[in-house]
Image (cartoon, rainbow, N blue to C red; front, side):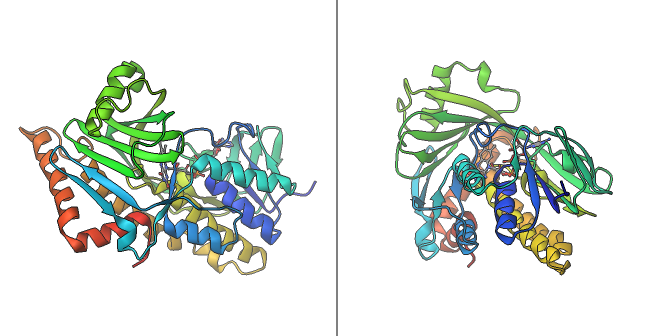
Length: 383
Ligand SMILES: Cc1cc2nc3c(=O)[nH]c(=O)nc-3n(C[C@H](O)[C@H](O)[C@H](O)COP(=O)(O)OP(=O)(O)OC[C@H]3O[C@@H](n4cnc5c(N)ncnc54)[C@H](O)[C@@H]3O)c2cc1C
């Protein structure tokens, strides 16, 4: 069997978007993932997709239907409730509710229906970016390009150690990711800016709702009594009793941010979480992963046709956008979070942070310029 031109590692959003575009352009590739077909995309992750991402996927002809809009968020503090119709401020350009596991499942199904070369249960164990060559399960390939779309613990990124700079920032807070079997409490996102820590309510589907609960980094969801957790979450959201008896699953999520530069060395390329990590504040990670993948796909397709220019410019094209998005998310995290700001210790530090968080919410309510900027950055809309 001849070697494929491209080996993609990872069947997350980035890897599958890339595979789908290479398949369309008839670039020979193989995609490998360590998980089984049934396991991919099962972890509770992204659920809200930016307007910009939906437009990009539509423009590229992806077979995905985005029809559930998310137009409003509500900020709640102990003093105020402010419903913010951000889609109004962006000229009717909202977010769309589209869980990540659905994106992964639908793209994998569409590709497999065409007989696409997706190899599940193939963990990559060895990568040589210089030959380049890669071993996954019982197969070794020597393609022209290896794409690390293998998420936060990327083996492809590790193979580039010493040749890329990894700017890594762990943060002091942990979010509990609470998946609940219940209809949404209201028809929009709620961000609760509470002195005990941030809490959120996010729509996922008619009978499933995602919540976040910010806790100090040493607290684990597994150590908390589920009734106490439900009570604390409902109280911070200003909906006491709303979660009593609701079935929940809880995962810990440690917040960290990272940028890898460059995102390519020789024949090896990084996309999505393999290249950068961003906290879930503002819901940007999957959107960046998809945009990386579309840009890299265009570069690989052009190179396949004899024009390497776009591929060579991949890092330069993507890094400025990634840095700007990290900047937005970092700012929004400061509005939301009671723990993850930089100052450590000091008398009255927690109250100081809380006063600033509440100040930002008042400015978002009262300042039309800040509100307009936030609406565009949050929904992913160019001005
Ligand atoms: C709780 C939570 C909430 C989030 N919410 C949002 C949101 O609302 N909006 C948003 O845009 N983003 C959100 N994100 C971020 C988003 O989920 C990620 O940015 C996204 O998953 C990145 O996609 P990816 O394809 O780069 O990597 P992944 O989705 O991590 O996929 C990587 C794939 O690589 C495979 N793999 C890993 N190692 C190997 C190996 N050695 N060999 C073979 N295969 C391998 C894995 O099995 C996996 O299938 C959230 C993340 C979390 C954790």
